[in-house]
Amino acid sequence: MTERRSSYEFEDLLSCGRGELFGEGNAQLPLPPMLMFERISTISEAGGANGKGQVVAEMPVAGNPQCEWFFACHFKGDPVMPGCLGLDALWQMTGFFLGWLGAPGRGRALGVGEVKFTGMVTPDVKRIEYIVDFKRVILRKLKLGIADGRVLADGEVIFTASDLRVGLFGAEASEGPAAA
Image (cartoon, rainbow, N blue to C red):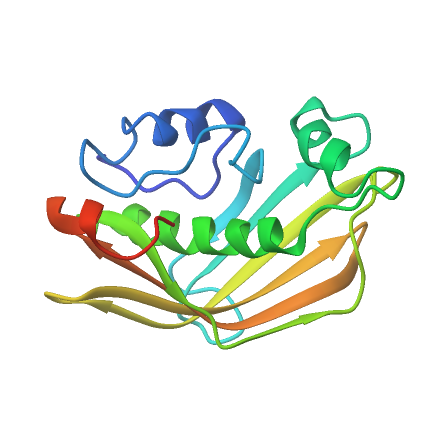
């Protein structure tokens, strides 16, 4: 990658999911249906609440075929997006940021401090926005991002996650922590 862009469209994210954006063996997003956003509207190294980087992503919900699979099974007659999928989106964005910085290795979610739910995503929500604000980025032998995240449904914060942790690891990562 020769130039760091400040936004990415859906096709770019699919390229990342195929291992093409940051190069083979490096940070990679999951492909649909597990890719939980369709656009990164802003990514910056110095932005965010702490001035250490920020990623903002979004996904249309109402009428979006990418959302049908989880609404169909969670819960029958009471469709709601599983909170763990929103958390995974925040981890995905944290790993993407490390790859965007040029750090080598495959992303793995390493943990989260606290998650608080104050709302939910239902099929009538028009748009989800995810915001990740970095608190610390380590790019030595250890490649680690620590961030706080928010999920907004139609502009209203519906959950927060503190101390999201994602690391990048070499080829041995296939035997390590869960994928991010």
